[in-house]
Image (cartoon, rainbow, N blue to C red; front, top):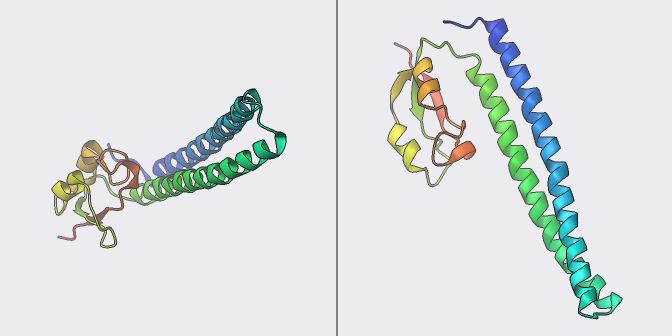
Amino acid sequence: MKKNKKDRQQYVEDYTKVRFTMFFDEIDFIRLDFLDVFCKKIKELQAENIFAEEISKKIYEDFEKGIEALKNKEVEELWDLNKSVSQKTVFGQCDIDKKYKWVLENNVKNHCEDCLAREGQVNTFRDWETIGLPGAGTTECDYHCMCELVEVIE
């Protein structure tokens, strides 16, 4: 069954809203977990009779490390989110009965085994949806996949 453009566009818009909502809901839980770690650390240090000034110094050092890790995690998740939304937008424009070739991204140094195995394969878009689209989490590189499907012009 061929989806019309309006149905596919609505699907992409709904998908985008859900993914962004999930992303920002998840960040709040990450931040709460992050703060919980510091509260536990303070209690542990207090139990060891460490003075407030030394606790502050240790917490600040841990905080700097934690903020960097949290920032990196959020940036990575936001990248994955934007990539998946943009891929859904691009893939939403594909004709399910046309043929597409799996192409490796030139700027990636090490491709996963799944992508290497799919390189150059040609299938209809419908078949690629079944096999797994680039960046859809169906390859070893998961949502980080940078490969493309390029329409085959016959």
